[in-house]
Image (cartoon, rainbow, N blue to C red; front, side, top):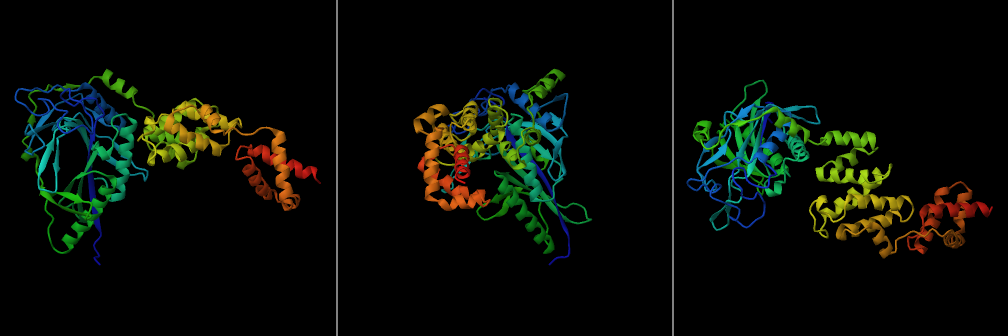
Length: 481
């Protein structure tokens, strides 16, 4: 085993599609899943004479992202042409930003306390998508061409796959909460490139390698781990590491050469002649700053201190902004002291249902049931109308139909029996069948009463109020002394 201590050096470049209705420089729809080449026009397909016009909303969202990440925003920026040839780039160049990006600086502090600095964020248009099939045929879908992107570039501040993963989780959370993007990696809304090198401790940095187009956080971690091992093995065998671009093969768990790494000179950047410089005034910045919601970290802290939730529950509720917004709307529609009951229904029923196959919705916002209905359901459990177990059955139906909880309780026959005479009759029968419970309770073992409670709940079909059953059983045992 080598005595050399190798230190990884890791930086990330993250491409995030902005959540606009239309593309960056034309009016074509920015929508995932359409038939190939149906969301195109002369501008995004690079037809002669077609001129780009900046989508102001895309620039506003880019500013919001910069504010959420603590960046310094330039008073003006410009677009440039990045020239390269590939089949998914119909113009032969990409409109991007080179020497005057719209912001710089900023960063993210990880839970470990490490601060990962951002070098810059710049805007650019996305390329199309090349689809390679098994028959060595490549087809090109230009629906994605011209979709607005921001590319955030970190300093090489990370030294492990764990730190890179933590950074990406935090970045995704910040961008989602800021309303900048859905950051859905399955749809390509968030894509990551990794720059990585290794060097012996106390020696200068060595040649870096770029790993392109990683489409999941898991693949980012696996690619980093493999590449660290590959580079260390090469150096210890006396070989050199080439500056190149590599791809990660998830099936084989390894990286492979894609092409030699380009330098900036290879792209022949020059200012985009068809777009004027972009000024930023104080009023625009303040407007976007005012649109930033409460960050996830602050919500988690507030849920713990003000609502009394556990760290785990607060983390689950804030894992997606849509979930947190749903929860807060339900809390506003509820009485005090219901946060924990609402949390249990959301985490154990709604989120579990979304993860299964029976619900058509894919996000909590798409569910037919609404936050105020969940609040109404919790109120029915608190006033004793139904049990918490029955509430779980009701919420499953609400997720499918969106019908009111009161209506479903009546239809399903789940209303608790409050008739004290009926409850007492069930309790007497249970005690007669289990006289040993009476002796156990008289001997100080109150837990023994559970055997009779189970019998009563079974006899009532689960409709008896558990608290009323327990109180009645204890009263009957005391009266029999």
